[in-house]
Image (cartoon, rainbow, N blue to C red):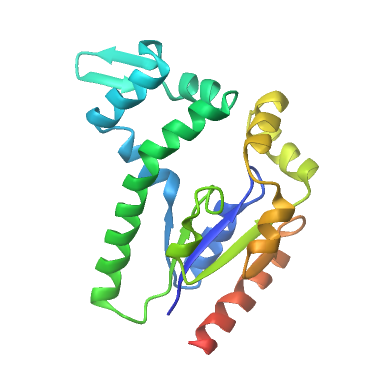
Length: 201
């Protein structure tokens, strides 16, 4: 089975679609969880604080950690700093992807594995996957969804601007999943792609 990279832009429903693939039996992973673990590594924390300043650090009796809100505030308004941070994190993420993939395929070479990767094309991760899927919606739909989750519109638009435009991602993808409307429709689109990939393999 192919290993899939799934992406889209902020608020467009990547995680929802990932969950739908999981229900069909796929092994699913969210790269944000890998990043969360990586950002807990003290050597990574030190590297990031040297780039962004000690004010992004939170100190406690158990050691140091990153104030992720402060980190996000800086990198989503400064493209150069964001790129520098990505250059620290991305190699570590790729190591995790390769380890997870090899461990699963060692047990079952027919496994369907899918990784949700928000910056798949921006970071040129696509070459590490057999196929790519882009989840997309109208920008206003994404803004409305995220507003309901408590994000303010300025932060939403900053994050969307920091990502490759969705129309470019759609051009690069092997498969597209529209996620503007009912969950039932999105679920049907997911199932069609899942079945097609199963048959082709």
